[in-house]
Amino acid sequence: MSRFDDTTGELPPARGSFLGSVNIVMATYALDGLLALATGALIARELGADGRGAYGLFLLAAAFGQLVLGLGAGNAAVYYLNKRELSLRETVTAMHALVLGAAIVTALVVAATAPAWGDDIFGEDVPAWLLVLAVPAILHLNFMRLALQALGRFGDLGLATVGQQAVLLALVAIFSATSDATPADVVALLIVASVSAGAFALARVGVANVDPAGIARPRWRTIRALASFGLQGEAGNVLQLLNYRLDQYIVRGFVSLAGVGIYAVGVSMTEAIFVLANAVALVLMPRMTGADDEEVAWMAPVATRNTLLIAAGGALALAAIAPWLIPAVFGRAFDDSVEALWWLLPGAVALTGSKVLTSYIFSRGRPLVNTMITAVSLVVTVAANFALVPAFGVNGAAAASSLAYAAHFAPALFAYRRLSGQPVLGAVLPRPSDIGLYTDAARGVLARLARRASPQGAPNP
Picture 1 (cartoon, rainbow, N blue to C red):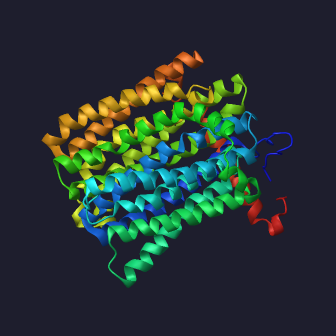
Picture 2: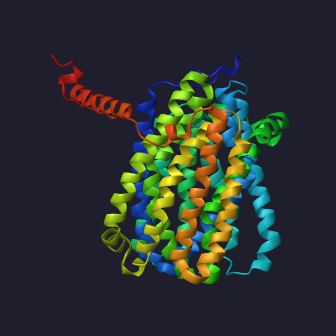
């Protein structure tokens, strides 16, 4: 088992090949995406466009809260654990202290501001007090997933990720079959699913790595270490979330709550394009952090250009089937999501390159650079949305997002060039030598299938 030895502070090296780890994570994201698609379709059909919009706005608020209150400790843990500068026990304990703090702060904020918000802040009678449960639940799950990532436990990470979505889908299906679900009901089910997945992830990290006394009386030295590094990158993650989702609030202001639901469906469909990029970025971050310069110089451009290539092919395929797929899955009420999806896809492809490059930048110990890149992109997001949404509605928001994603990719390329000293074309344009990656991967898959097909796993003659 990949565990820190708290007496030495050493972390055993992650096992398995890079491509093997990517395959595990990519399979995780693919399965998670399919489950999310089924869950999203069920929620959309059950709640309608208005209810789907209210649910989306609540999720945005909860995601924003857990990002801010997490102080970047999760991503900092990936860095410090792989640099062997903090032990697993003190890191996981500090994470739990932050979760407790997040619950307290959220409760105070909701108590102080909810009377001014009223009952319609999210729409469809979704109560703000549910944030007091949702924020710490989501934060804890994300912390434990990042701990598993730092340990190279990608199989367990996959089970926690898929498990949350599977539990949510099952609960929504059961609830919908027995009663008329409301957006508040679905939010409550999300909280249950997040708590369940977080508990599983903690069990795989190791409950023994949590010191109850350290939660009640936190070790501020550890929290300061995590926060001082983590906030540099977490500011970028907060800005990135705004970059991804602020447009939903702008759509609500200029269009309608139903418009938010229609736009959210288009956005959720583009997430299929991110499956490979998310997998590559997740595996690359800890691996490049602990790798030598020569290995990193090879991995970063190869991973980026091939991720872009596969994402572009996936985007073309999704664009072709969207006019049939979206109405069939989500219902005719979401027909307008098709055009929004088309406008989103070019930027989605560009963003896959950004996801890989920002992992490289992080691994070089420069999270603040990622924050600056995202700040540039957010300026484009806000300006483009206020220029395009009033005139073009949901499609204007989608086009603005594509512009913002492209504005994220361009400075990421520039930063990559400055940090690596390598030409940007090497990270963008495929090369003939890349064919070997695909043939090697295909041979590896065929070899594994052949071994499994052999009686009792015996080698083939």
